[in-house]
Image: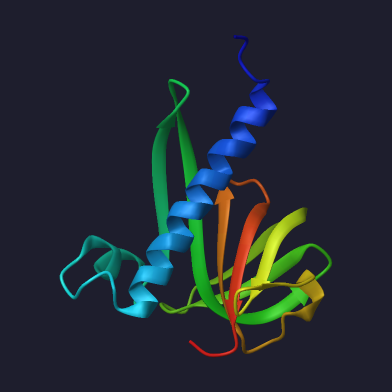
Length: 135
């Protein structure tokens, strides 16, 4: 059996990382993660930003997670004010999976004041954006 192309492996790895993040956030928000769980501690409402390094296909992959209140939505960018006051402008990929309250929406549906969590590999554009109207 031949190996899938590098681009396909990277896309699958990023989708897997996004799925893990989504599952952790869902568990935390539903309360199912339990009060002493790692998901609650690290991916709960106090999350400001995170860097997660996974070994995939024998090589490390560096993922960046940013969370904050939306200050601006531009053409392919999202500017967030993170909980510690840091302002970060995150590039968003054209084909990103953008969700508002769990429903797929275009990036331009997000508004100033909403809360968002973005996932990207290194300094690349975010491929996952999860937003809510409240924190």
